[in-house]
Image (cartoon, rainbow, N blue to C red; front, side, top):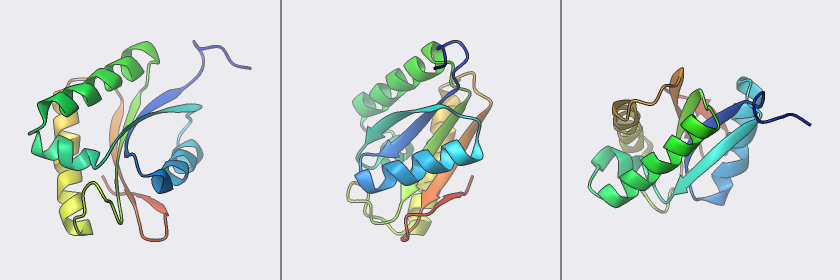
Length: 131
Protein backbone atom coordinates (compact mmCIF):
# COMPACT_ATOMS: atom_id res chain seq x y z
CA UNK A 1 0.00 0.00 0.00
CA UNK A 2 1.26 3.47 -0.88
CA UNK A 3 1.32 6.46 1.38
CA UNK A 4 -0.35 9.73 0.46
CA UNK A 5 2.96 11.57 -0.02
CA UNK A 6 3.99 9.26 -2.86
CA UNK A 7 0.59 8.58 -4.43
CA UNK A 8 -0.06 10.35 -7.71
CA UNK A 9 -3.39 12.11 -8.12
CA UNK A 10 -5.07 13.84 -11.03
CA UNK A 11 -8.16 16.03 -11.14
CA UNK A 12 -10.93 15.00 -13.53
CA UNK A 13 -13.86 17.27 -14.39
CA UNK A 14 -16.33 14.83 -15.90
CA UNK A 15 -20.03 14.53 -16.56
CA UNK A 16 -22.06 12.73 -13.91
CA UNK A 17 -23.07 10.22 -16.63
CA UNK A 18 -21.93 6.85 -15.30
CA UNK A 19 -21.13 5.59 -18.80
CA UNK A 20 -18.16 7.94 -18.99
CA UNK A 21 -16.62 7.19 -15.61
CA UNK A 22 -14.86 3.86 -16.13
CA UNK A 23 -13.54 4.55 -19.66
CA UNK A 24 -12.07 7.87 -18.52
CA UNK A 25 -10.51 6.40 -15.38
CA UNK A 26 -8.99 3.51 -17.33
CA UNK A 27 -7.64 5.84 -20.04
CA UNK A 28 -6.02 8.20 -17.56
CA UNK A 29 -4.40 5.38 -15.58
CA UNK A 30 -3.17 3.75 -18.80
CA UNK A 31 -1.75 6.92 -20.42
CA UNK A 32 -0.46 8.80 -17.37
CA UNK A 33 1.42 7.83 -14.25
CA UNK A 34 -1.64 8.36 -12.03
CA UNK A 35 -2.76 6.26 -9.06
CA UNK A 36 -5.96 8.06 -8.11
CA UNK A 37 -8.04 10.31 -10.37
CA UNK A 38 -10.16 12.66 -8.22
CA UNK A 39 -13.57 12.80 -9.89
CA UNK A 40 -15.36 16.15 -9.98
CA UNK A 41 -18.74 15.53 -11.60
CA UNK A 42 -21.61 17.70 -12.80
CA UNK A 43 -24.25 17.32 -15.50
CA UNK A 44 -22.66 18.93 -18.56
CA UNK A 45 -19.63 20.49 -16.84
CA UNK A 46 -18.05 21.81 -20.03
CA UNK A 47 -21.16 23.87 -20.74
CA UNK A 48 -21.15 25.19 -17.17
CA UNK A 49 -17.50 26.22 -17.42
CA UNK A 50 -17.70 27.54 -20.99
CA UNK A 51 -20.76 29.72 -20.41
CA UNK A 52 -19.72 30.85 -16.91
CA UNK A 53 -23.35 31.83 -16.16
CA UNK A 54 -24.02 29.65 -13.12
CA UNK A 55 -21.35 31.12 -10.88
CA UNK A 56 -22.34 28.88 -7.96
CA UNK A 57 -21.55 25.74 -9.98
CA UNK A 58 -18.36 27.23 -11.42
CA UNK A 59 -17.22 28.10 -7.89
CA UNK A 60 -18.16 24.59 -6.67
CA UNK A 61 -16.00 23.05 -9.40
CA UNK A 62 -13.18 25.47 -8.52
CA UNK A 63 -13.49 24.57 -4.82
CA UNK A 64 -13.19 20.85 -5.55
CA UNK A 65 -10.27 21.47 -7.92
CA UNK A 66 -8.57 23.43 -5.16
CA UNK A 67 -8.80 20.44 -2.81
CA UNK A 68 -7.55 18.03 -5.46
CA UNK A 69 -4.64 20.22 -6.55
CA UNK A 70 -3.59 21.66 -3.20
CA UNK A 71 -4.30 18.75 -0.85
CA UNK A 72 -3.72 15.75 -3.15
CA UNK A 73 -1.08 17.56 -5.21
CA UNK A 74 -2.66 16.77 -8.59
CA UNK A 75 -0.40 17.81 -11.44
CA UNK A 76 -2.88 17.14 -14.26
CA UNK A 77 -6.43 18.34 -14.79
CA UNK A 78 -8.57 16.44 -17.28
CA UNK A 79 -11.79 17.96 -18.61
CA UNK A 80 -14.20 15.58 -20.32
CA UNK A 81 -16.85 16.04 -23.00
CA UNK A 82 -18.89 13.12 -24.33
CA UNK A 83 -21.31 11.73 -26.83
CA UNK A 84 -25.01 11.61 -25.85
CA UNK A 85 -24.73 14.03 -22.92
CA UNK A 86 -28.12 14.58 -21.28
CA UNK A 87 -26.88 17.65 -19.39
CA UNK A 88 -25.43 19.21 -22.55
CA UNK A 89 -27.20 17.68 -25.58
CA UNK A 90 -25.08 19.43 -28.20
CA UNK A 91 -23.37 17.96 -31.25
CA UNK A 92 -19.71 17.02 -31.00
CA UNK A 93 -18.46 20.14 -32.82
CA UNK A 94 -20.30 22.42 -30.38
CA UNK A 95 -19.08 20.43 -27.38
CA UNK A 96 -15.48 20.63 -28.60
CA UNK A 97 -15.78 24.44 -28.80
CA UNK A 98 -17.21 24.42 -25.27
CA UNK A 99 -14.38 22.14 -24.13
CA UNK A 100 -11.80 24.64 -25.44
CA UNK A 101 -13.55 27.44 -23.53
CA UNK A 102 -13.77 25.26 -20.41
CA UNK A 103 -10.02 24.64 -20.58
CA UNK A 104 -9.41 28.39 -20.87
CA UNK A 105 -11.70 29.03 -17.87
CA UNK A 106 -9.83 26.49 -15.73
CA UNK A 107 -6.47 27.94 -16.83
CA UNK A 108 -7.66 31.34 -15.57
CA UNK A 109 -8.16 29.75 -12.13
CA UNK A 110 -4.34 29.66 -11.91
CA UNK A 111 -3.81 26.22 -10.43
CA UNK A 112 -0.20 25.08 -10.32
CA UNK A 113 -0.46 22.02 -12.56
CA UNK A 114 1.69 20.62 -15.35
CA UNK A 115 -1.11 20.16 -17.85
CA UNK A 116 -4.81 20.68 -18.52
CA UNK A 117 -6.09 18.06 -20.96
CA UNK A 118 -9.34 17.95 -22.93
CA UNK A 119 -10.81 14.48 -23.51
CA UNK A 120 -13.63 13.34 -25.79
CA UNK A 121 -15.59 10.14 -25.06
CA UNK A 122 -17.16 8.97 -28.30
CA UNK A 123 -20.16 6.90 -29.30
CA UNK A 124 -18.28 3.65 -28.65
CA UNK A 125 -17.20 4.97 -25.19
CA UNK A 126 -13.58 5.19 -26.32
CA UNK A 127 -11.58 8.09 -24.90
CA UNK A 128 -9.49 10.36 -27.08
CA UNK A 129 -7.26 13.28 -26.13
CA UNK A 130 -8.41 16.25 -28.20
CA UNK A 131 -6.67 19.20 -26.50
